[in-house]
Length: 167
Image (cartoon, rainbow, N blue to C red; front, top):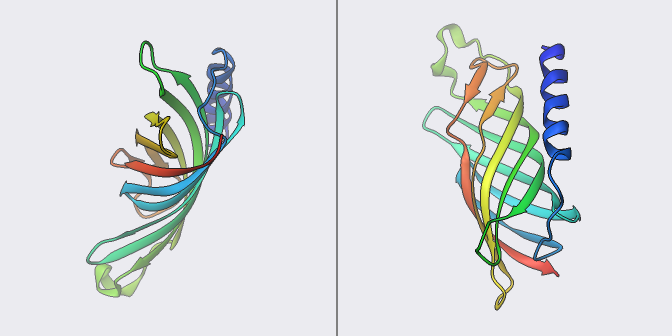
């Protein structure tokens, strides 16, 4: 697994380095990610076209729920012929804390209640000129490393609305 992670990291770095930087419309923003999962989000551009997003997320089902802390590195590029619209891609990681209903597992044995995940990001973001608002939509494919459901999860992503803190 360490070898696979090293190869993926090397490929991701090469992909990030292959693109030229583009400008962003703001410095930082705070808001909500409305999707799977629900989250509070903070996004900060660390250089021209490169951002870090941090968010705390929550999801609840009838027999289990989880809370996660996630971080992502995102590369933003201008969308051709549309002002203030950018597409972005990136990679990140998260730690998930699970709470299970004891009846879910025979004999009451619960699997690990903490899970690590590697995440990819692909999305679109629009920032308004007239008001301090940024809207984005993204897909966050996730690979869980150590849980009862080890493996790939493709059903993650959100529509985000963020208040722009600085230009």
